[in-house]
Image 1 (cartoon, rainbow over the protein chains, first blue to last red):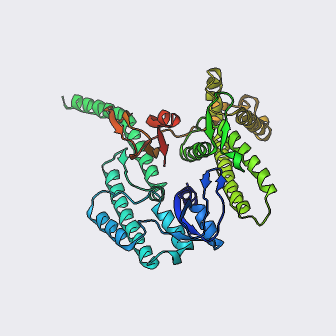
Image 2 (image 1 turned 180 degrees about the vertical axis):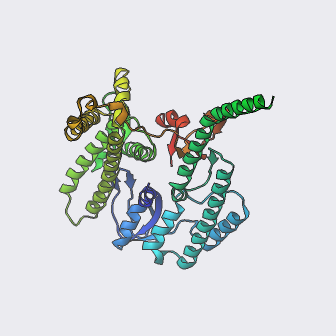
Image 3 (image 1 turned 90 degrees about the horizontal axis):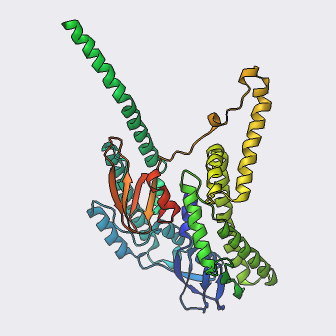
Length: 197
Length: 216
């Protein structure tokens, strides 16, 4: 899948906004949202929030995790742990990119938050590369990847699945040729031994 | 646009909200995008959603252009149209690429009424193969010596690689998924609910079709 498609999926997540207009409930196919009261928080899908923000009709309320202290903790935890830690949400990168991209002024300490999220991403990606390397070296055809987000998984495509496919193909080839090789070597040694005698 | 919330499926009298249909459609799109082979069609969902869109578009025309709702609804409709178009195109791409094996398998599936293709997709696949055959004959085969003029359908076939590795998430706990090992020692693993894995497509193909796992 393309990164924009992952972003598209991530845009369905619900976030909070404070609208600056008043409107009755809006009945969308993906659910009903509102009623919108100027100044009162309301939950909407991320795509709608960004759209309203672009029309200057709302302020985005940053999600709880979009906070320097919370993110610092996540970063430390990520550094300490050998495994991938659970992220505050499964589309954290998409959410961060869209909110910080179009509503940065609604997020306190936006530049710091951007940096920390980038750090967390980098730590996780380097962990992912190390574990991919380990997986390939053990010749495994199976791996467990809990807590990896869709965007992270997508970033190792098509490399990891393709590498595993090729590994499997090589193993199948060697398996197919192995019995005949044995046969050859045994006939060879037989003929060799017969020469000796 | 108040009446869009609930619609009835006349055949099983089960009430399904438009929201559920959309969710099903979205995961069908995601799985179809990521699976190597073609999956059973979700034509009911597509038809239902197209009906919803039409209904919604009629209602939008009644609204004034300056109404905030107009742009919001238009945006949502564009998003849903994107999913549907991309879903159908992905299926058509697979049908074109693997037309011969798909048609062969589909003929057997139609007999047991477990068809994967919709009637129009099936027709498309048949015509595609026919056109390909005619094209081959016109361009090459008819100009060959008589003993080389046979169109060997099965030699032209391209098969999806079912042994490719895919990422997946288990929607529920599944015990005893057997991973074939080349050394003959099969490994059995359990997929806990919500856990994510990378493994071969083949052992989980049926789980995917039953909705027990989602591809990532």
